[in-house]
Length: 109
Length: 118
Image 1 (cartoon, helix red, strand yellow):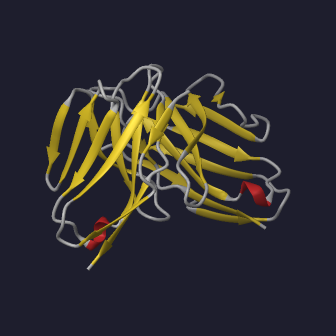
Image 2 (cartoon, each protein chain N blue to C red):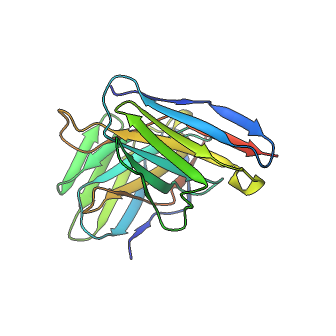
Image 3 (cartoon, chains in turn cyan, green):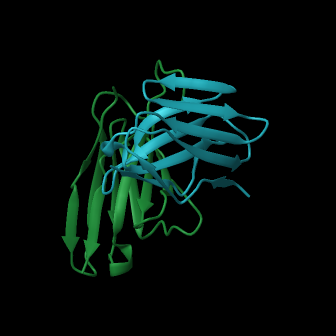
């Protein structure tokens, strides 16, 4: 079956760095997405990786290793507004998004 | 960027009534739209894939007669929850895929509709 695993919850301090991991097993692979979702709101796109390596976009970076079925989202210089759930999603061979359960990130002052 | 709207943002209805939710792509044509449901503290669950001009493809366990989907144009898809019951109370989110001129198959999400059935 298809499976996406990510930690349920993480806590970090304002100004620090946090890494949210995601491992996946899917039928085919057409890219991995990271989305941010604030409570009561729809997800918003953060990043897309389809080739191995690190993609940097401002304070956020995303890494992919296809051979290991592994990705991480790195958030630097954390701000209180970064408190949200972070969803990892993999696009399978049918171009269907398979979603992880999300990681709730709590930022403390 | 691509914008997707949803209407209404929230709705409260009595058990047994039907509720229609609209999803519109405002600045692009979406041949494919997706309907998701999300219960509190859970991930998104795909309900169905809606293709313009054809019948929707429902995921296993989703009743197609209860959740009616119509994708009549390239910019509008509707989800009708028929004879809603309290267990249908959830956050319903649509997304649309814009393949034109984009390097990857990003889905753009609507703001969601919170349905509460009394």
